[in-house]
Length: 66
Image (tube, rainbow, N blue to C red; front, side):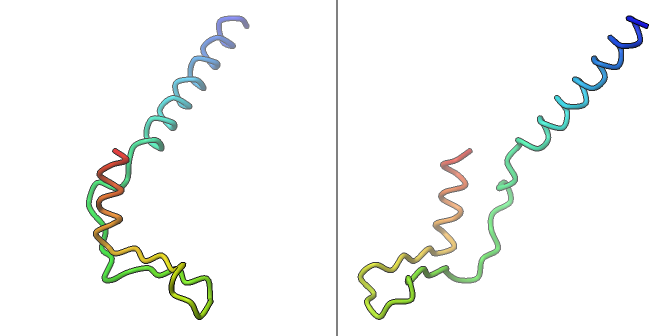
């Protein structure tokens, strides 16, 4: 009974390690296929507080975060 429990625990731990290893790997390796930009304008008339992300910004962020 003890040996079976140890084997089961080892198998569960190995499975969890594999799941974590494959889910942590970066998925931003191929570049983004954005065709434009994303604009956050807060739905206000003033453009002073708007934030605009261009497609190249996301590629740059992906490179920095690797």
